[in-house]
Length: 277
Image 1: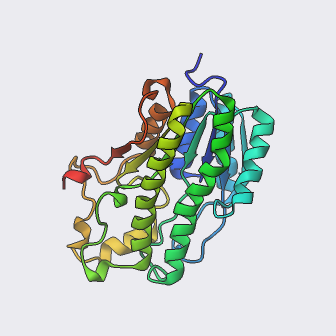
Image 2: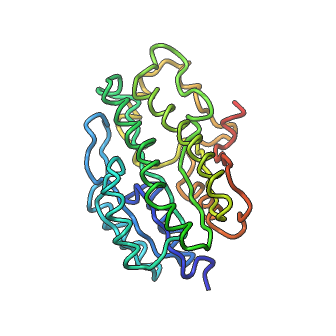
């Protein structure tokens, strides 16, 4: 018996990276998965984004665990899109227990990073997108009467600056930090109003994680050219360059488990001590 047998998780940004790792780890614990991902390129993002083939691979990995996954292309910026996929999964599995608001982009460097559109794209996907995800799902969690767990993937960029010089300032970077900080306020308010219904809401705040969002030519070029002062941002105290996806998924798994049944309204840092620096 897995600890999540009979449970269902809804995950945004599920095609690769952290979203895929969350889906697979929860499935290994016995959960079925409803997942969505944009699977398209946002014009202000200068690294390759996920594809339909990536999302298909996540489905295969979940199915290898013996669990099922409903996965569709969807856009968290559009509430109707999130609602449609969520309802499809609900019709298939009959319930929802965990919501992982994970979808994100990082247009903080690159050709289009210092444009108003980069600001808009960040806020639309990582702030409004989180709002849409939680608004679509919380009524079912409350109606079921069994409680549940909502996990919002934020970042250490919400805790401390990721820019240290004017040369390192971009509108995309400002928007990334603003969105990741904004979801903390959403998390705290949702945690407050949903607590009487035993629905817990928390955020996780990783330092850099080894995903396609980080391991790409855009980031490598930035590190080759950056002012050494800007490279001091988000330096880990534990001497590792990047976290692995399972480091974050282990935290998500705990936040979905009964072991965290009274843990709510909290910001969980998984940062290798970056906040100490």
